[in-house]
Amino acid sequence: MVTVGILTMSDKGSRGEREDLSGAEIERMIKTLPAEVKAYEVIPDETDIIKAKLIEYADVLNLDLILTTGGTGVTPRDVTPEATKAVIDRELPGMSEAMRAESLRKTPNAMISRAVCGIRKCSLIINLPGSPRAVRENLAVVMPALNHTIEKIKGSKEECGRG
Image 1 (cartoon, rainbow, N blue to C red):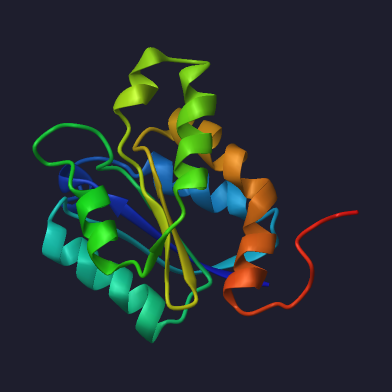
Image 2: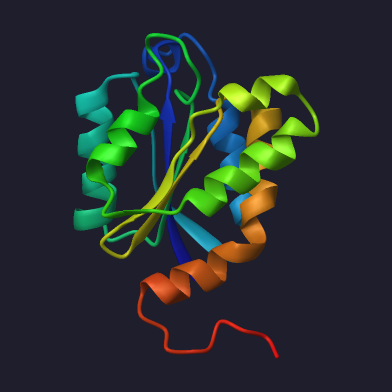
């Protein structure tokens, strides 16, 4: 069972002014892994708060997978990628590139996504966009690789090749 944390970055959501549909979409989708959500919060778009939560989820809660939604665009308040880069040990650019490439098939706006994927200790962190539709589209791209990636992060010695 994969342990999961969901962090939604939303100033309005953190003040109770907007329902978190994107986080709910993540929760619905990851149940097919199978996975169990151990932590789920809506926080403001503040670099220090995001960094602290990512560190807590990885270092204290020891979650296998941390999925963020929101704050990956180009507005002045979109700081999720910077916060993520500040706390990860290693980046996984292939995941970010795969999400952007698939999204570009649907909208030219995908090219302004700054989503980051990476590893902190034994936790996989993936930034997702802030809309439920974009969450569905992007998470669907990386879902087939999640179990294998998490096993490898945790030290699995099984071969990566399939034949």
